[in-house]
Length: 120
Image (cartoon, rainbow, N blue to C red; front, top):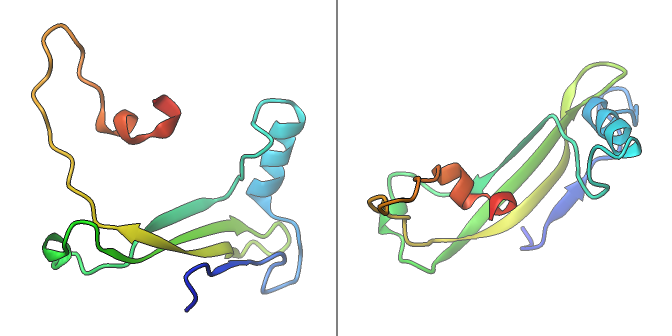
């Protein structure tokens, strides 16, 4: 498979309808100014590396291996949940984050907040 593989599915594979539920809800929010114009609304988004969890610790730091991103939505005509976009990513083995002791006088932050660029 090519490294920059990306495929979008514009219509439902069952009934050929182009209408998707979460995509249309997102458009309503964008039209009202309550969501950023560049946001994509999907039913579900999954992403991660394709790696054997039992061998992940033995992979050298800096090694690259395949990863994936899959976005799904729901057809408004027949109700089937299907992939609207699939992408091959390149993952890189990094040093596992350390849990450092809290600094005196500063409230500890949640790891979810630390790793989320929206809160940086």
